[in-house]
Image (cartoon, rainbow, N blue to C red):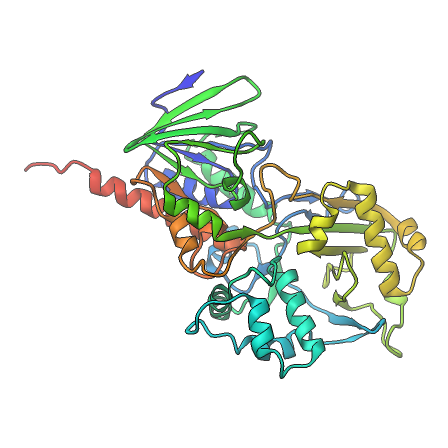
Length: 452
C-alpha cells in the first residue's frame, strides 16, 4: 500500500523529540504524519500505573533534572507542579551504611576537567589528575560516570562531560523532581495537541528503508496490516542512537538509499549508547523504615542509597511519597550482564544485593515483594540501550548527527542535542524543537515570492 500526498513531512519515531517536533510543525500549518515502530508513543519514556495505588511506575525516564524550560513550560500550561525529591542519602562503606554527600568530593575532582586541553577519556583523566584524591573519591567518581552517565569511563569524552556540567549549572540540575502522575502526563499533553491539529500517529509501523533525494523521501515500512510506503517532501528521523547504529537485517535496522554520508557514519561511530537496567519493586510494607544501620537513626527518610554492590549499586525510594516502592539501578557493564536474562534472574539479583545492603536475608526480601516492573532496554530492538554519550574525539559528533541531509532528511532525539543536555528528556524535547525550526526555515526559504 502506497500513501502519497497526505503529508508535507513524515516523522519517524513518537518519542518526546518526535512529538515535540510534530506539535511545532502542525501548529505552523504543515501536514504531518508520524510512524512509530512500537504499540505506544513515548519511546524511552514509559510510564505504567501501579495496580493497587495507581502510583506511576517509570520503566524509562523518571526524574526532571533541575529547571529545564522545555519541561516546565509544558507543566505550567497543564497547571501541574513538579514534586521535589527529599530525604536522606545513604552510602555503603565497608559493609556499613551511613549518611553521606556522595558528590561533594567527586565534584572537586570533576572541576579539574578542562576542555581547553586535548580530549581524553575520563579514565585517562582520572589516572593523570586523580592521584591527589583518595582511592574512595576516585572510585566514587568512576561510579558517577558509569551510574549517572551509563558510560564506560575508558570511552567517554572529558570535553563532553565539561559541556554537560556547564549546561547543568544553568538549570540547577543537581535538584531532582518528579511529575505527579509520571511522564505520562507530558505524553498525554503532546497527544492532545496532535489530535487538535489532526496529526495521525501510525503505531506498530517500523521503518525499514528510506529512499531519498533532494525534496523527496520514500519510506518503506512494515505494519500489522501489511507493508506501507509513505511519500513526502521531507522526513524527520527521531530514532534512538542505538537504532541508527544498527545495520544489516537486524530488527529495527533502517536501510538508507543512497547510504548515509560519511560525516553521518563518523558521527555514529563517535557516539555510544549507554546501558541501564532498572527494576522497581513494590513491597508489602516499607520494611526499611524500622532498620537502624547508623545508631539511633532509621532509614525511614531514605531517598537514595549508594553502594559498590553489583549488579545494582544504586537504589532510591519515592520520597517524599511514602509508598512501599524501591527502584534499583544497574548501569553500564552491570546492565549488560543482566540483559536478556529475564525477570526471574533480574529480581533474584536485585533481592540479593538489597538483602546484603540492609543486612536481611535475600529470600526474606523476595517474600516481601508484591510486584516487580522492569524493561530490558538493551534487548529492546527499538531502543538498543538507555541514552547516549560522546566518545573521546567526538567533539562535533552530536552536531554532525543533527545536521540535515540536503535539507530533506532531518534528525532529532537526545543523541542529537549538542547543548549539553543529551541523555535527558528535556534534551530530547529541545532537539525536536530545533529540528522543527530547521524544517520551517527551509520551507520559508523555498517559498515562492509573490510579485506585486
